[in-house]
Amino acid sequence: MGLFDTLLGRTKQVTPNLDALFALPSAAVTLELQSGLVSTGSAGVCWRPPAGQASADVQDEISKLLEMDDQDPSTPALRSVEDDLGYRWLLVDGESLDDLVTRAHQANSLLKESGWGPQLLCTVFGFVPKAGADASAVPSYLVYLFKRGTFYPFCPTGPDSRDNEAELRLRAVLTGDLPLESDLGRWMALWGLPV
Image (cartoon, rainbow, N blue to C red; front, side, top):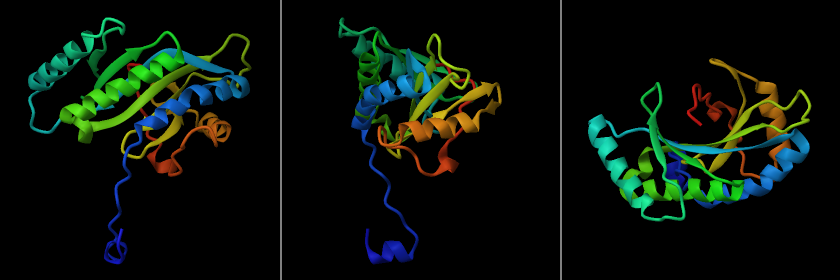
């Protein structure tokens, strides 16, 4: 970035680092030991459909991508759903967190390589309290922001409420394990997650 960019207030967009997803399994060990949370075995990749493209066209393109993914018999099929706000989700499951992260990375890469990179928003991983966890352990999500290359915790407590204190505790626990989003204004509430 040059001097004129700085003077004119232009910033350089952060290049997404999908490999940051592979830090999640080791961070999950910390989450389990310090917060009593374990993976649900589910994740979702969220993107917004391109403006002006008919919903049927979008679904047709995604269906073709999913058919391509089905060609690998060693992996289960991805599922595509639309949420209440019109965002699309590719839902993935994994028997282990390592498998889940690999599948989420593949889904992100598949969409990016197919020209959907500008529409990618985030990838969400679900976590729940393990048996015997204390009361401070609440169902939580770790959200990876595609365009920022960072994670943040999201702890919904109802249809439109969240536990900010639990989110800040998780941030403290995960500092050093994951690239965390420092701008709290970017910690968006993701109500009605299909994950």
